[in-house]
Image (tube, rainbow, N blue to C red):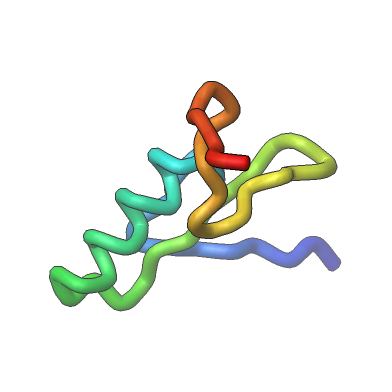
Length: 57
């Protein structure tokens, strides 16, 4: 038997933009938001500086 999932809002891509949009929607009161990330691995971690950001040593 094939399972079918249904959501009100589906965000494609779990990068910084997708996570930001999902967060804003949740704060705005949306209850059924899901993020779909097509890659098998993902390195997003909150508060990580972007790859080009300068880091003091």
